Length: 102
Image (cartoon, rainbow, N blue to C red; front, side, top):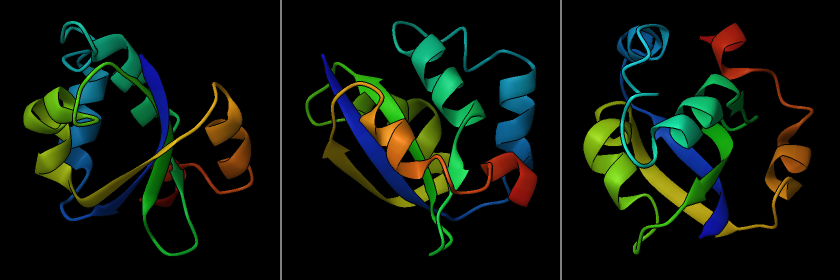
């Protein structure tokens, strides 16, 4: 298990992702759904226009399952940086919420 600070370029209208979150379809994905759902609901918008969030992940390479199931439909240039639990959220806490901005 590892934690990452994730940065991703938004490459699609996020209304589809919002619908997936609102219908709990992301939450129901196993085994990573609850973590991904929480992270995407709380994602932030960085000054460079990228979405950023902290993610708990068990995959190698990082986010492999999440990318196949959800992320690659909405994001590109996905980058991960290892962090300690909570450090990613603290690092991005001053950025506006992603859902306030799109």
